[in-house]
Image 1 (cartoon, helix red, strand yellow):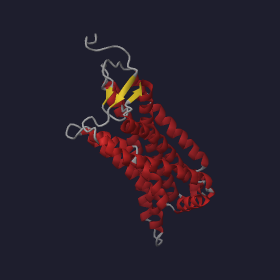
Image 2 (cartoon, helix red, strand yellow):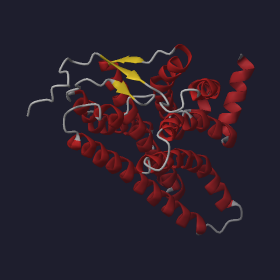
Image 3 (tube, helix red, strand yellow):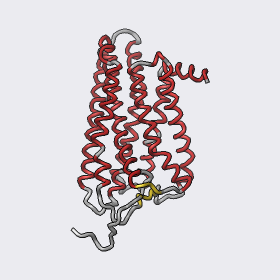
Image 4 (cartoon, one colour):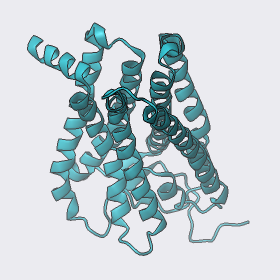
Length: 313
């Protein structure tokens, strides 16, 4: 099928990211809180990683999984936020063709990696509470290594076709992305090709990966709650639940922001288009900033490790 005459078939070498197309003045007001959240996320996660690395008492599978989560948070923040701030501060809107699709791949794969890590952490708590005597033989360092490989391989392989499919599309004349980041839908709709399969693959893959993780997390906590309610010893139930409290709060942060983002995208005809853009940015900032703080406040061992680290400085 021939392209319309007003379309150019010249290859697109770069895209322009237009943040908040309807409210450009937002950028200056948002740059300060976003910068503070970014510094908080990077500082808190780095501190947590150093604490777990230096404190021998934290060399346990549960904390190794938390380290994996912090690493994923750091990469996600570094992939998204510096570019957003460069747009806000220096009006640096351009992003290369390859850079855009690399950002797209990291965002899609690391988001599902985080979800999968939460699922593995839920299984860790399930074994610890429902099968405490078998915990040392099941949740070992080898288990954590295999789980980390599974997290990276499953989500990296299954999400890789998303940017590949988008990069193979023909981009005719339009290269202006009305978003702060290179999301698949924002980029692919600039193409003059049919993007039905592209969107369908992202939809099916995303909901399959995130949905299966969520189902397994809910099942794990259902078994945990059932086991805790059977405990008769005074205070034992509260102690058992407290070990899961931090993890549950992190899942709540992650799921709530993601759910709000999904709902606003589905209802984008009824709300300003800049709202989903802002929520997408916050989804890459709020959970990474809060995750290490929640664990640091609620976990005695991590709190003590951080205090030792600060005394060494």
